[in-house]
Image (cartoon, rainbow, N blue to C red; front, side, top):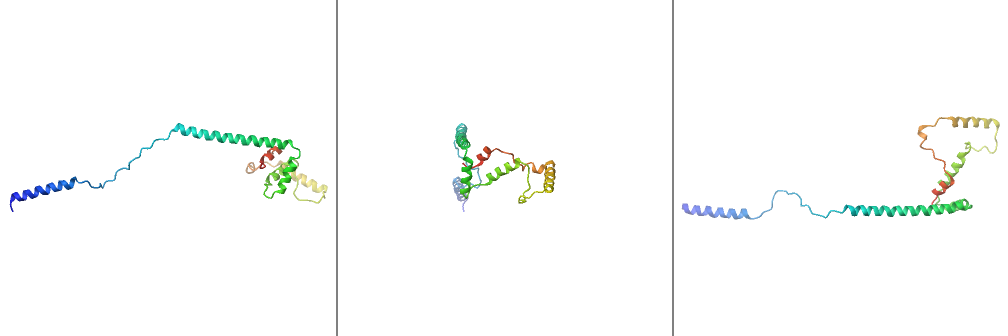
Length: 166
């Protein structure tokens, strides 16, 4: 082997290596994800849309309240309205009778509290005296802090009518 021949082989190998290096290959390094440019939403347009929705909802609520108040006013003018309401509630099975129970509680709460047991019309002076003492004792008891949230405010008949489903 000749020394010049060896130099020729080395030169060819060197050129081949440069060609292989210049070829593109996949990178083993992980790069950051490309960020897509999106047009940012216009804040003014979004605010205007939300205000428009709120205004629409407010108008619907006002119209509903006006209609309801008008119907309740018409119902309050009618003398037989309560009879009709009671008759309708008695006719329908799915009626909410809790409102009427509340009305009954309000009317009975105005007077002196009475015992729940029925004495079949018999009253003696002694039993009346015992009941009066018991009622006075309960009336003079200090209010319990736990029960102050349970109490219901006394309402008028108009408040009860507003609870009825129109």
